[in-house]
Length: 229
Image 1: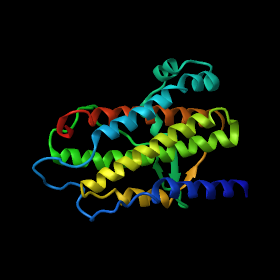
Image 2: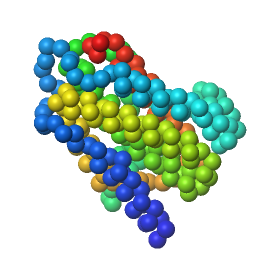
Image 3: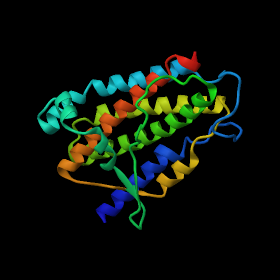
C-alpha cells in the first residue's frame, strides 16, 4: 500500500511538472515556421536562468558526492560514464513499457543556431528537455524527503530556478508562435516512476544532477550569439 501511495504521489508530481504549464496563450502552429529573421524570444533571460541553475548545482554538488560516495564530484564524474545516466531514471506504464526521463543531448556541438529554422527547433527542444529535467529533480527531491533530508533545500532551490527557466521558455515559445511537444508530455504523464533502492538510488540522483548540469550548459551555449543576437 505504501508503494502504491508513493506511485500515486509521484504520478501527481508528473502532472505538476509536465501537464500544468504546457500550453502558452498562442495560436497553434508548426514547431518550425518560416521567417526572414528571428524577432521573438529573449535569449538573455534564458541564459541568465540557465546560469542561475548551474550556480545552484555547483554550490552543493561536491558536498553531495562526498556525503553519498566519499569522493569528490570531479572524481566520480571522471570514473562514471554519463552515457549510462539515461538508464537510471525510468517511468513505466502498467505493461512495463518504460521511457527514460533524462533527455539525451545527442549533439556534441554547442554552437548557437545560424538560421531561424534551427533556432525555432532548438527553442522547442530545450523546453522539452527542461521539463524533463524538472521531472527528474522531482524524483531527487522525493528521495531526499523519504530517505535522507540532507540536501532537500538545495534540490528545491535548483528546481525553483529550473521552473523559472521553463516559464521563460514557454513565453518565448508563445512569442515565436510555436507549440510545446505535447506528444512527449502525454507519453510521460501516462506512466509511473519506477524507483530503485540504496546505491542505484544514489547513482541515479548523481545522474540527475550531472545531466541537469550538462543540459543547462548546453542551453546557455546555444542561446549565446548566432541568430539570437
